[in-house]
Amino acid sequence: MKKCITLMLALAAVVVFILPAFCQEDITEIKDPAFQTLKRPAVPFMHDEHNEKAGLDGCLPCHHEGMENGEFVEGDPAKCADCHEVAPTDDSTDLKTAYHQQCIQCHEDAAKGPVACGECHVK
Image (cartoon, rainbow, N blue to C red; front, side, top):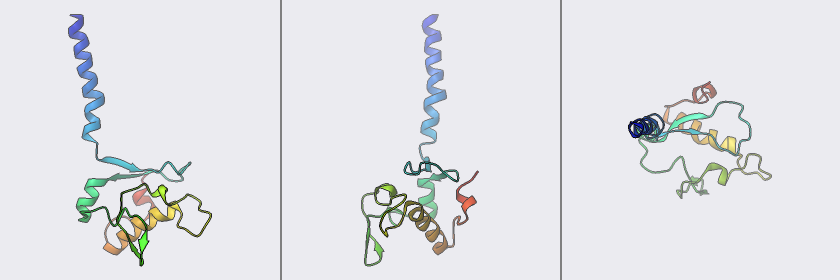
């Protein structure tokens, strides 16, 4: 009887704690640990759903590995903070601006998607 109860509890734990993780594996947040404190909530972002709606096949235009002749160069998808600092000491693009330029500019160019703060940073 004790083995049966133990087995039932183990099965319940799998259902309650592990299965939901697989159901939500695409749901993520755009929350960069480089930002120590957030002024607004992190942006919920479903990567695959976004790319499907936007008709994106590759990693560009979102992920890039620098620029050549004014155009983004495709490379290994890296974290934005790998190249953009929160407070750069030179004239490079800061991290917050890099995120906002990538997202907002693309949404404006396509005339689709959110562009206002509260549309992405939902409270």
